[in-house]
Image 1 (spheres, helix red, strand yellow):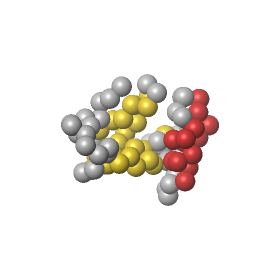
Image 2 (cartoon, rainbow, N blue to C red; image 1 turned 90 degrees about the vertical axis):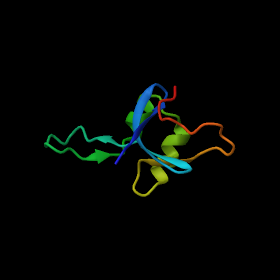
Image 3 (cartoon, rainbow, N blue to C red; image 1 turned 120 degrees about the vertical axis):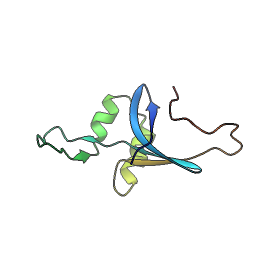
Image 4 (cartoon, rainbow, N blue to C red; image 1 turned 135 degrees about the vertical axis):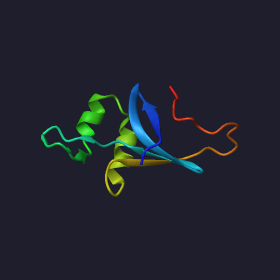
Length: 86
């Protein structure tokens, strides 16, 4: 599903590029799920520990399902994003 990685505060998150936007997944593996296929859960407290800005955490908390952010591309960009920004 994911085709690129987005860097937020020196942490890397899976993302999906589509024409005109990027969908970022801020969910992480459930630390209490020891199964072979652990669930992905939205953990705002852990995101804060990693230094993710509160505005992004709050926006991801409002998404359905929680943990996703959709960024529209800026108008008049000279080059499309590659997903490998700093």
